[in-house]
Length: 288
Image 1 (cartoon, rainbow, N blue to C red):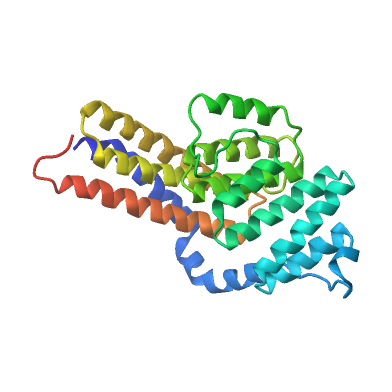
Image 2 (tube, one colour):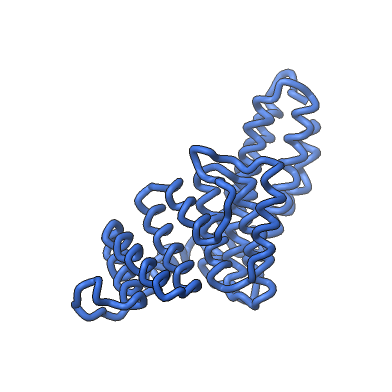
């Protein structure tokens, strides 16, 4: 069948990749790795003085303490106060970083559109990619890319781009998510950023979501031309996702958690594609 022939090679590549990762060891190690990941960040105490008397740096640290205790709303308010103080001293790096922290709290509270808008503010992007306005059109993408390329590459901007890419994926704006993560990756490669494996992983996750989205569009397609377009989209994003998962896992900078997540995501991708292809093989009259 056409679909089966088209994806047989990609499924073989997925299987070989998973074998190379040693998936059985990874699954056996999962509880310990999760425990380690949860124990990575600890923070020193901040003097018990009123928030308005604390510096922006102290407020940032206090916000992290509150966040890790599960006091998300309190952390959000603390980081907002830190942002105000950074702005008062015209500290651009501090302001961007504090807005990224705010977006993290907003996402944790489920306020994804507000988190998206906060990150657009951090990056000084004029186009509204966030609900209810929504999806980047073909006419706005060149303008966005132009705005991004005019901004200097820095560690904090890379962090903001990565956070925006993740947030856009969570609200379903996959094309804009891919654009932001690709820009973050491009910038990271120019400033020797140590976060390249996690950027590759995040980009692969977006590409995997685009595969799923195109599968849905294919299922709903009512004409052959649309089916061909969606199949090409599936193949392109599938190949990109496999490549980026492999790059993330094989990077010398990748830690065990990134390697494990890459392997698990590849396993899910392989399973989903195999099930989707098998479903069409069972049709009495194939769609293609």
